[in-house]
Image (cartoon, rainbow, N blue to C red; front, side, top):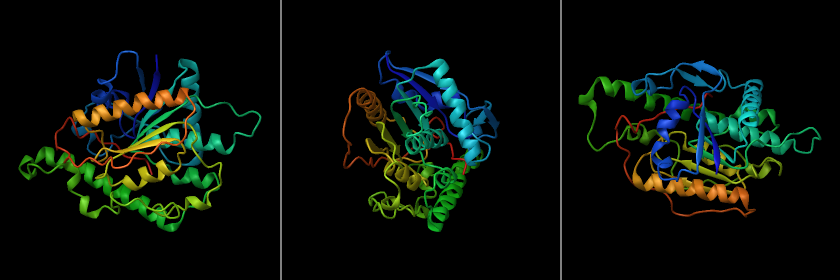
Length: 307
């Protein structure tokens, strides 16, 4: 029976993440057990989230300092060791930031005699990224351009996601056939058809990073071509040695179409199998879906990284 711990995004909650993932979880059989938990700090809702959900919202860290991030690592690790074991962590947005940095810190310090094993054997990253303060704390060089892209895409995401509340109050502004994420598409810094070279992944030079700055456990990296934070998702994927990537074609969300849900469910099955059997790096080619994201309230499940 696979057990998966689920870590929500900034300004959302366990119950919200449970709703966000309901479509693809319904494609898995009852042997899969998903455990949803709230982060330790209360927070304001992510932009647009209170338009959909009327519930308390949380964050894994109020400020993205290395100390706050490491506190979150310990908090989650303590929970996992008390309530686990878990085969995998399934994460969205800030939850990905937590899991990815936990794995990277572990990889860069695994020669220490007192280093405990990771409390998960695989990770499912959805609309993720890696917070730069943690990378700099590890001694990795972050270029000024990378910081510029990070700040710009974060602000653009907040603007696009926050537009949901305005549209909910002014329905006449909604253009039929145009989804929420088309609003800022022409201002995105990325072209989803072009994969950047490893020497310049939106300002990160992976050819200069040390060999142990890698996430070596089996992973899934899921992102959306219309997401302003697509660059962060690609950066996270580049840190992963044994990974499968999937562009769901939407924004900073988890589309609920049958096609996307079946694909994500299949990737969950595969990553659990890979966590149990040693494997080499897996890649997939043309996986970008061309469907337009609908502006439906139940689809616009929005979160944002705490930058």
